[in-house]
Image (cartoon, rainbow, N blue to C red; front, side, top):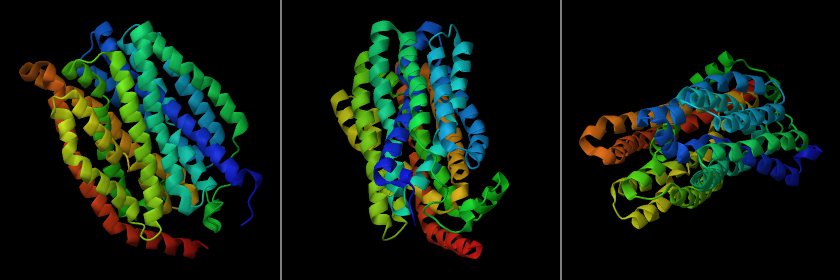
Length: 430
């Protein structure tokens, strides 16, 4: 198959790095609130449930609601332009968060961040699948997904240090403004790839509707198992992770500056390594059996499940953080392989919508309900456990990870039949 200039290996890697930087900005701006929530809580007199709404449900509701129509647009329009515009919007709204004078204003600013971020990942996923051949997509999408943890690293580190020195309002401004500038760089350096370059066949040129995409996905039971497995894994990740800085401050007596640096190094570095390694293992082992795209996160999550409870219940801070390094590596293996195998289940023109649907389920359950229900549980347990209520609320949330493991197992059982169905449909169209 002839390759245009923008399909050269060097340029493909350049685009992947650029999109990964965008994703890092996504999580810097999304997670900055997590490290800042203790001073915001003190300044505005908020409850843990209100913090959960700010960092979770209010953001997720607009994020997932806008995500599907934006992905529908991305399957028909210039995806590069959509990602650039989205980055400018969410970064601008992050900067505006620094001017909020009350809870309502901050809530509205976070809704604006969610609206912008809805246009980030689905178009980027679709572009990556058109820049990289199927046997490299797991690694490419996992490399892209390391942007989550690069963003967490930078958001925690700079957010904690800046807030400790200059206050939480300045932290929002410092992390928001660079994203607006980078949106311009992306717009003028990245080119839109041809759709379906690596897939051939006439179906790469179709422009399916949301209804058509859902009709295809209804015949892919493995996709729905993957969706809900990712959602419940994310429920633990956001439900526990969004309160982890508060947990270290309240239960382990650390300061916000210390917490920012520690979690930047522990969660950011190990999360990025685990995410990339998940895609690497998925591609290497999946070449022999595609079920490895699901077995890799299943084995990782099962290995980490019980040690994770020591992270939440242990009293030795150094040992807690040491165990967190290992569990974080293992529980972040899932995202790249799950996205890659989801894309293998549908035609190229349905990939952005497929990613948006996966992220709809993942974020409404994980990001939307995880922090809110954890915060609500903490408030309800406070009369009995006092400042330790957050610890036990996080333990309750972590238990849902067991259901996620069961769903990954079911997805792997169903996957061969669904991939065969996709192959037969592709032959029928061709």
